[in-house]
Image (cartoon, rainbow over all chains, first blue to last red; front, side):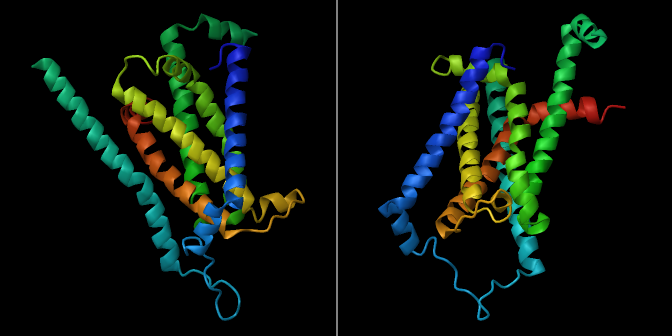
Length: 98
Length: 164
């Protein structure tokens, strides 16, 4: 925990300045040719509306698929990193023993 | 007052155990909150938006509890130290910045939160993309972040949650 007011003030300043920088960056890029390029490249194109003009409700399968993808997005890097770290730590320990 | 005196009399090892227990509970709550927030298709857009903002509170508690480590590692980041520690430190910063990106872009496409305060923003696909990318990257980094502390998580979970 921050032990002095100086540290707490520094942390608050870092958080506020970071937020401000990101906000300015996003606001700036939104107005630049980069943003226009992204929009016109098709990368961030608005999907065509359905015939009724409303977005079709996603199916249960689509919802479950998306949920599975998001869970895997956490679990797969977790698993890989744990494996890599264990391998590195074991190699390091074996090296010390040798 | 009595509680303060008791706390002062606690031996350091017991204090450490208490801090570890608090840290485990806060982190578990934080993880559950993150999972709820990243699944708007299941929980609904209102919970997604309010949760996304309120999640800042457990994040700050998480940072405060690990404050000594942050200060100590910042002080010696350019000095000789384990690669794992350096990687962990940089990862935490990247994750923090990506979280802020997701938060700010999320506010820019808010449908239920900002209108409560009378703020109406024209939703732009650009912000949606930024939000989707940053949220996606955040979840991947979250997995790596948990993995970096896996041994600690297993150890304290066994000690405090699974102990009989």
